[in-house]
Image 1 (cartoon, one colour):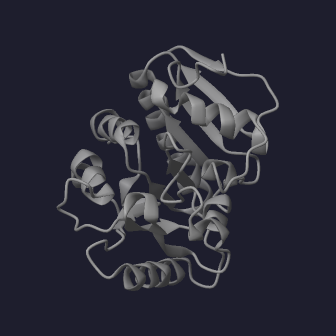
Image 2: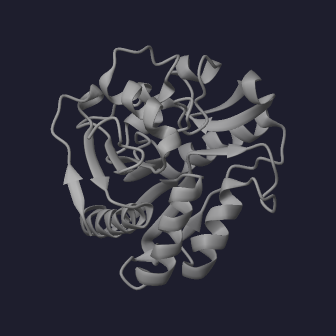
Amino acid sequence: MSVKTLEGDFNNGATVRVYRTPDELAGAAAEDFARLAAEAVSERGRFVVALAGGSTPKATYRLLAREHAGSVAWDKTYVFFGDERTVGPDSDDSNFGMANDALLRHVSPAGIYRMKGELNPGLAAAMYQETLEDFFGDGEVVFDLIQLGIGDDGHTASLFPNTEALDVADRLVYANPVPQKETVRLTLTAPVIDAARSVEFLVAGEGKADALKAVLTEDVDFHEYPSKRISPSGGPVWLLDEAAAKHLL
């Protein structure tokens, strides 16, 4: 596996790792998942992760099921989701459906908590907020790992450009109207993502290169490029393939 950690003063203290191909990127993400799971179980007795949708995470999840099934303590792993479309779990557009098919049904985690996209969005967001509050109890909602992607418009999770959720600070989960998609999306809010112990963006493909350059190196408004809104302590980690990173190399 060939990896290059880029040097530079990237926005939000980001660490940027570039892999030669999408397959190498997915392999590295799977290794990170297994390593962070082991650390979390050793230190806190459980591993709590929020999964992402998209093609690059799908490749990662397939590798986890195939090559790391025995190296992750799935019986101590609790799975949530960063966002969801307003569809049922059997839809081809469902983030849960993709993750379940690629990974979850093969490994039997201790808990799987999906966003119920088939319900009224406001109700589904309120229910997922209650689920998070019940799971974490009186403590702060702190995931061990949140995986994200980025769209060619700079969105991440379902935080789309110039949408309401970008300025929400008093909710864990939000039913975010997305006029440009003519829909509503369920999403974790930015403060929840920022509170995670590790935040990783998995990004492959030349179509993401322009947005990446803006988010990582330019003085852009996060309302225009929502991925720039994500600023966890210690900075996010970006795993890119060479095509996505072409403006950074």
